[in-house]
Length: 585
Image (cartoon, rainbow, N blue to C red):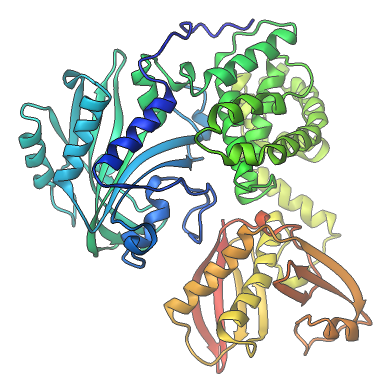
């Protein structure tokens, strides 16, 4: 069997399930209402692609837009939130980085503030979890331009824990938020634990008292709030006496399943990093899929597809025979469904998705790896060669980069996009103009083109059926949509339009095309630029039960492929004509 070189798993001080239970019971005992984790797909929050923090589902309450007492019966809340971050995906495989993670948090919305938050956190880690005070130290905000030093938190720590080491740090370390490009934020105080190999931040206490706009300008919130985040993976590692979460019960069932596959594959391979990457990525893929994310080449779907394909690639590198993703999904579902029952409920959906995606990628990877071997001899790969791998073998550029790093080859893929766009232009016969107002045809402009259809109908829904399209232009950077309306849109109207578009994107509506006569199209309720000349036959694109338009394409096949829709600007362009500029991420 594959040996990771790790200590054998022994009876831990606390199992992960016990830690979750202790946390929720502690805060419930001091008047907090326990709120279930929200989905990894944010609910009507276009500022982020995926849920990245515990406070995200509470953002409207922090901003004073909704009342927590009406929805939860309390201003004091606690949760264990499923979270996902992709910024460090290339670092996964070391001891500290993960894509999916759990964040334990307590929240006070216009209720208690710094003193109580500090006392609660210290009592929990020392009295409930039994961490030694000698190994703990704390940090506070040292101040920066426009935001004063947090002297209050410093003094509270001195009184609460006399003699505790307190370090003052700047904005990068001790000012948190907003989650996305705007929203609640504030100075923070962090609790650190000293291990044998270094210092680990375990709990971040954020004193949320500001609201940040998209330009980073701060204004006071109408109420002061507490938002804390205690990292599950780091905490379990400490409590189980391990160097990383991969050695704890959070990952060992998955890693054991990988070890068995490697043994069946007939080769011992001590690629510890590959094992960690596979275990992280399969865990993340299962959680994303269970929350309704579908593999695609854009947005959340692209994140899921990238996880799956990297896991497959590392399995191939370790000589695992046959398809294995469904096998590895089983221990994830078994280990976590007690805390997250949606994994069990959606098990068959998850398994089917993994099997389908693995089948699609299997031959692509085999052929690509054979071709890639040629570049190992010369020790480098260029952008043009990376594009050729993509064009001829469907080999994704990010896997080329990953594999080059694994094989210690120098890789220059900076100009990959240039070759891709050149290929797109040639494949269309050098056309000067593209259908649907597109200045060029690429995956990104195709996503934005479908977004304009959603935008058109959202405007009609919010402003009335008198709204009609007057023009459209789409580049790789943004979409521009002109429409008939006499008044400047209010911020509330723009927010309603943006939220409605993102709601339809998140629903995963199918995009279908029908060819019919012009009269049939008009009778079906399809809308279009009726001043244009149409032929006897027209194409009509329908998006779920929301939008139906005359159009020449191209479009995505499912709205989830679009990604996150964001309005950038609204302005007048002529009498009775308004313009919206927007983008997708």
